[in-house]
Structures are given as structure tokens and as C-alpha cells.
Image (cartoon, rainbow, N blue to C red; front, side, top):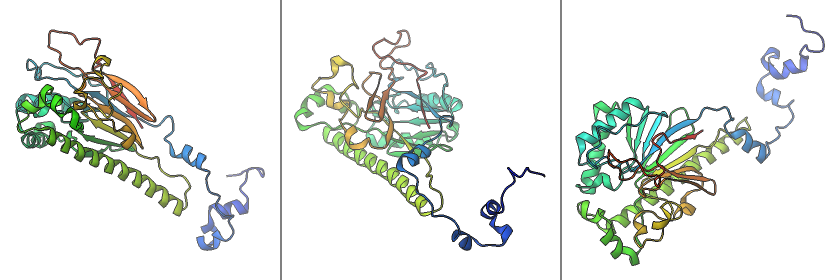
Length: 332
């Protein structure tokens, strides 16, 4: 092929681009190259982010369907609007095992992956240990085709995306001065076999420790990738993983409940103020339990819930809950 003199590659450019043409090894070649200039932090940050046209990972988010009311497991329909379905707890009771499984089967037939958080109502009529056994049994059901993932202190890395989902119930912390009122007002302590405030708080501590450890682990992985990249030839590191946290109980007492309930003495049964302790590196936090749909930001974290609440088949969802069965979030 003929190239005009103005566009023909020079001997030096061929030398730099195709050193094997000149039978020069890389060690010799490096002696003739100028030193590599480091990327500025601003440029590195820009280049490490996914481009605007990068495909996004979609999650349809729902919680607090309470299908145990009037046994709605077989009648309630979820139109598939995303690849992944997040069910953030209080979907029904694991004691209603067959109906619960049949409901999940319809979802795994429609969605690529169904991510299930265990809410407090999942354990009604059972002990915590018995409920966990039934949850693991659900994961193994052949009819669910391996598409159900129970998020009980579980990390799920979405294939094909730099997205990690961290999920647990995240039982709330009940302070000593509120124990009596919480135990009197909250049905968990009568409907979950052997459940106590002390056990509730112990589970909170375990969930919080797990969450903090997993978030720090993902941040260390990102730091390791960056260190390896700097030690090698390229200047551009791969994008940092986006962290999506899913819990049943709320990660804050602010803006997560209806205003008329925000100062209830038993509010500590519904959430714990921990965003400042755990949110660094988290992109989205999905929660449920409060029967109040909300969407707001705390720093760089999008906090969002989409809760149906107690709805009978013949009664429409109230405007108060702002529930949207087609609610979708996107991460890239």
C-alpha cells in the first residue's frame, strides 16, 4: 500500500511500535524511550470510571409484600422490568414453605437472578435456626434452577459487571432504655420462637461487623488493583467496584419512616443510625421494614426503599407508601 510522504510512518515510529522488526528486545528499547509520565489523580479518576455508554446492571427492588396476609403467594404478580429482582425481606413466612417456594418459582422463571433478604416476618412461626434451615432449603430447590440467592451475610458479585451486592437482615440495635417498650410493642418477640431483645442485639452486632468487614475488603481489593497497575506498565486502573447494600432493617432513623412515626419510642426496632460508620464506598443502600417508600442521599450514598406494606387483595396500595411494583435501580 502506498502512503504519501506526509502520512507514511517514519523509521523511528516503526522502531517504537514494532521493535521486533529491528530485532531489538524490550530491555534495549526501554533505554531509548522517555520516562513514563504518571497520570494526574484527576485524570486517573476520570479514566477509571465507566464511560457513559457502559451497560448498566438493573435491579427491580421490592420489599414488605406480606403475602402471608390472606395467602397471596399464588395471586400476587411482579412484572419483570429488570434482569435482577431484589426482595428485601418480609415477603412472607417461611413457615408457609410450599406457597413461598411456588411464589419464588414464578420469579426465577422471569428473572435472571432473585436476591432474597430474610425479614423478621420470614421467621414468624419458627425459631431463627429453623427459619435459616428453610431458607437454605429454598436455595437448593430444583424448581428454582439455581437462580435464588439468599442474602444472609452474603456477597454476590454480578457476573459481567463491577458490581458487588452485600446483603443481610441487619437487625437493629435496641438501646437499654428502650428494651421494655420495644419488647411490649413489637410482635417479633411473641411470633419468633425463643426471640429476645438480647438475641436481637447480638444479631445486630454480627450483621454490622460482617458488613463493615466486607465493605473494607472490597476497598482493599480496589487498592490492590491500583497498586498492581501502578507497578506495571499501564496507568489506567479498572473501575472501582460499585457496592450495593441490601438490608431489611433501615440504616438510619432519619427519613426512613413516615414522619408521624419518626419519634415513636419503639422506633429502634426498625432501624439504626449507622450510615456514617459503613457507607464509604457504598453506592446504593436498599432497605425495607418501615412500610415507607423513600429515596434520598446521604453523602454519596443513594438510600432507597420500595415497600408495599399490609395490603389485602381487594384493597389498593395507599398513596402513603408510594409503592411501585416496577421500581428499578441501575448501577454500572
